[in-house]
Image (cartoon, rainbow, N blue to C red):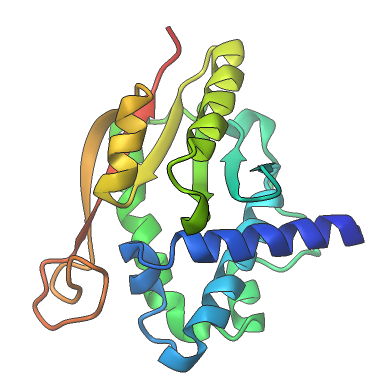
Length: 216
């Protein structure tokens, strides 16, 4: 990978770590990390996420000097399997010192996958928005909405839907305003997590919402 690409990956990782610092799914994923290392671990986690996404042809799209960015995975028909000589997701987590997070990290996709299968069945021709995040200092400027509208334009041209998971009421409302429809409620960490994603015995877990947008 080029130096410029690595710099872009660093910028996006830092931005998303800032944007998602209070997101329940990230709080839950990093629950086993030393609190004193949480900020560094959060950036490392997003870097792993982005490397894994890019290995499958995902795009990283920035606005306003990376005050907002999105990560879009193309339909599986246009994606690719990771190269055999490249480390897999678990290996990257271990290399980043995030092995203690593995159980919680794998818990989330195991639950969100159920929602996707209910919506699409065996169909795999849809765009997937992995992340859209805006720096806390830049919220209210519709930067995230601009990225989402850009993705909707791509999906409209391809005549394919977009799927995503909203992790907070704030993001759910944003997606609703842009025409996304909730198709499933997902509860993560039931019995061991609080609504904010922190670990707590007999907790109710936290909610995520599967949402879909279809071109007219």
